[in-house]
Image 1 (cartoon, rainbow, N blue to C red):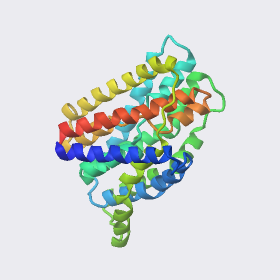
Image 2: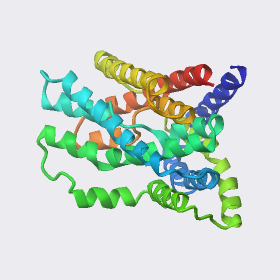
Image 3: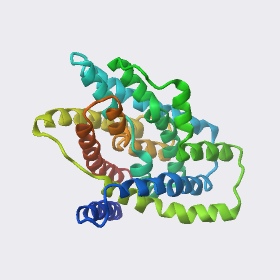
Length: 303
């Protein structure tokens, strides 16, 4: 337990350092996007390659992609049903800002540090399904509810999905692992080195991007949405660990990943639908704080 708490405190310290350096002017908000590109296009793909190279993938694990999609659909449906008697705007906002999982930039550092390569692979496969929803499908559904025109086509959504370097890396490494094809040692060594920096850079980036600005009159709605999101997350996490018919390592990974924060692209999609971006950003940042607590507590219990 002490080891888990120590490492979790170190993770929080990295986020605080990033936030503090931004506040004193050492970094500017725009630097978030530079570090984000490094994480998304270099260190996270390297971490995926590194961890997938250490396991033998079983075809039976591919069902985890479907679980990632289903968990998204559950929170989307919850957001819609919670606002059944409210306006289309409220329904659309809740669907976008209660769903999705920020796995690559947040949950991966925890999984990378505490679980085995098999647990990392399960998390990666969950994120592959999660990415299908976060990169366009959730936005499409929210736009349909809102009645917006110009919704993205399936073709555009697929193009956007495969333009994601981490998603492409998931797909390639999953295929190579299933076929038991090994990458050259020099590539694995390079990936081990670059991937080792992913946890620090991802958390540091979150600190630079962290911001909570909200009006008091919106607090009730924020608490309501986050309360529902994390009630569902805790119930799903408990189900995965105690009741799901999977091996222990798979159950641990699914229990942890289901407690992750809301998708980092939710505020952007909220803005695209002319929603309240300020409240969406506040919900997103607060979900990071809550997930730090819930994932740390889960790790203490599960490990």
